[in-house]
Image (cartoon, helix red, strand yellow):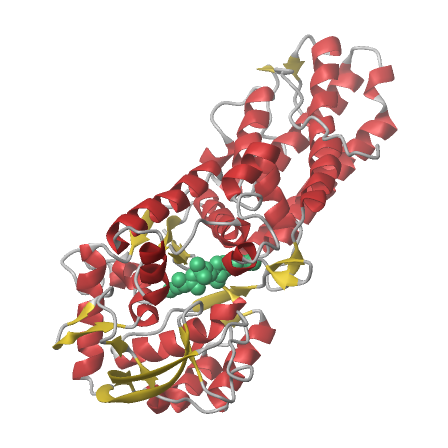
Amino acid sequence: MAHYYITTPIYYVNDAPHVGHAYCTVNADAMARWHRLLGDDTKFLTGTDEHGQKVADAALKNGVSPREWTDRTSRRFREAWDALDISYDDFIRTTEPRHYETVQKFLTAVYENGYIYKDVYQGLYCVSCEDYYTRESSDDGRCPIHGRVLSEMQEENWFFRLSAFAEPLERYYAEHPGFVTPETKRNEALSFIRGGLRDISITRTSISWGVPVPWDDQHVFYVWYDALINYLTAIGYGREDDRTGEWWPTSHHLVGKEILRFHCVWWPAMCMAAGLEPVSHVQVHGWLLVGGQKLSKTMAAEGAVKLTDIAPVTLTDEFGVDAIRYYLLRETSLGNDGDFSHEGITARYNTDLANNLGNLVARVSTIVASKCAGRGPAPEPTSELRVAAEAAVAGAREAWNRFAPQHALEATWGLIGATNAYLESTAPWKMEPGDALEAVMGNALEAIRLVSLLATPAIPRVCATIWSRIGLDGAPGDEVFDTAAQWGRYRAVHEIHKGEPLFPRIKVSDE
Ligand code: ME8
């Protein structure tokens, strides 16, 4: 059985989750669900990044210990993921003992291999990024991402010899053309490498909120340096339950573009330094923007948006979980930036979900109820709808396989459109009960079954509802794709349940 290991970044717990975090997590969730549907042995990891200055500062500001603060905020991420039907297999917190053990094992290997040494660090630092800047890479002493004045730092630190890896990294990129996708992001990573790699300071003495350095008890590791290793913690690296051989290196990290350098330059170099093959694939995604700017906690703090308005739980309460998941997966192609707005969600909801999908299911079940005694007939072995269905199955399969949920959904909605057009042209509402009508309705029901199967990684909840409305047992997510995706598996005698509208239209003020 094929293995599929997919991860999200682990999110900082300095504040509550917002829809930007949901964007990444929902995309990873859809991919995990797709691979489960293929029958792959799948592991989906997410979690929270709990060390570092930013989190320690947030705890202090809120008058609680870092431990209490991280417990509280990490829980909010899990609540958001529950509201969004996120099917993670493991949720990692970097404050867990298993993570300390793996980090220490991994970094001891790097140390023993001679890639860590002591020196004095002097330079600029942005607490929001938890990242260093030089005068040249800063925006005149300010952070180019957050706009805040950078702090001057001077400390005796342990350093990682990143400079030793320019050539091995170039070779790795050349030998693994699919390592970073999309191509534009691969080129960006390569230009970082070609621009010259400086050694990086990887420990701190100024704070104690971090993983202790095993060979020097005055130091804790720098937050990014421990965070990246979480991907190995979850598969037991260096511990008794080590399953690295099974899940590594064929794995997929989904990350936002602002953390490309950490994942596509530092992380593979760290793995090489520890004597481990780097991860096989990093998929980089773009940002959700509001008014052209990255939606962020900083933006919320400045009052440009209200954090509660962009909280995943608020959005699922307002629009429903399927609508939010659908919008996040459908609106923007992975890798590009996209605008986020309530108007955008409403438009997608009314058009794609209410008008196209919801109406199709309602229409078909109404006719079956009135003209087929509530029992779904079987599809025909050949029909024009079969041709459309097979094209949609092939298109969606190919798109899901290349990590392109937007295109998988486009292909699926193509089948919804074809089925609606088929009903328009055959007009079963004008037909008398009999074989011809039964054939049309059987074909339409089979198309609906296939739509539920193709869309289930994206919108599992409503697909399960549709599945049972057309009289099928279980849920589409329990199927094995290759068998279930064949035309003609819908059999007669299924009892159709009409039910409430799946997506009642949202009234828009000028309608
Ligand atoms: O960077 N649009 O955590 P973080 C799209 N702890 N995605 C967004 C987004 C937006 N507007 N805002 C956030 C960290 N994200 C580190 C990661 S991994 C070893 C350590 C998503 O809380 C996006 O996936 O700042 C981004 O990479 C991630 O949240 C950063 O979350």
